[in-house]
Length: 536
Image (cartoon, rainbow, N blue to C red; front, top):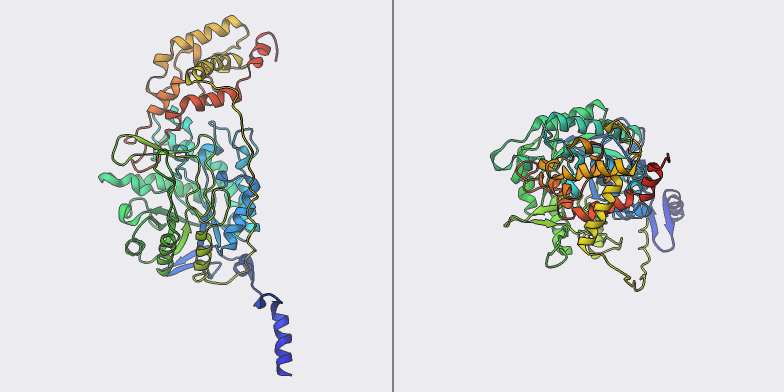
């Protein structure tokens, strides 16, 4: 009789299957942390974190929405949750969301990347998959990304100094944040969304290397902008403790860490810097990125990755795996870094596989299995996990035959022609105070612009000649290709970025190809003839 009663109670309070036997019914992550209502977000105490007043070990993984096709967002996020992770981390790249000054794209634009840019949908999918979210809105994101996420059009202002409390830069930064932060505010955990924390800038302590001091007034500008827009979620900065110390931090803001070696030593140093705060590693690397002309694809053994992760978790630290799934750097958005020992640049490849637990193609790895087994030993609470989604079906596309080719010289000639057409085609170059209505006026304007090229490109300025003021936008393909060179030549590490940070060199080394792509995409020769001969 006693056994029968026990069996009935087990059926009532447990789930049973003939395969797995009895298994306690577990709540979802959100059920556990929102039970009884939400009264607070993520908070800290010296030994750890609380979410809504309940202990939480933040085990998260980086998956960038702009490096994964939206069709795969749910599958990749479910792979993360199935491994026991409780949160996803992502950057927000400014240069994708404001590709031209004052023009914003959050997934509804007509730009090459528009399909990838609905981060609201991405974060809502993450929440549907029972994941919390950590958001890093820059403005500088590094991430082996073009210009570290800063829009290239910023560099047209000779008085602008990126990543400093420089008024022109602060103006454009705040203008962007005035669009982004109201969206993020509604997605905070305390508002019923998934976001539990925001990062302020990114590795800003590196700016203070070499004896100089970081511009903390700039960090304060970002912090105040967050406060202005009621971003109440936990805020943090991130740097390598041994290299940066407190250089990139703000008083009262949580300091977090990133490093590649000596996790115990680095975390002890972090604890010395802020003894009243918990430990959190925002970038722990299970692999690394690849650059052109590397001898081979970078890999880290599963054992080395697991040893690093275990050492961090055994220090009672929370952790973010950068990357959990790297994806692909599409288009020409791959960044670069200076070589360590020579005055040359290393360009990153488009693959951002990162030797992560989930491959670029979305496949599981031995590293995934080992990481999932390790993580479950350190979670603050057991919650319900989904089944692992299946891997995508692979297929070959067959042999592709090439029917022709263009030399670099031919590309340049075509770009020059398209540039001329772009100058002529606009119906309302209002800065010139007139329209271009005839082939003759178009030719004279273009010829004048060509004669002024040498002086107009000097110092990174796009166009200075009066006759060409109506064609000063690089992003609408109305300038000559060699202006890309002078524009990007202004990007010197000593002036703009720390030498250890990514540089905007895509337009420097691949300027003609990048420019050609934009010109072909945006220039329609028939538009010129229609508008010239009396069309709308």
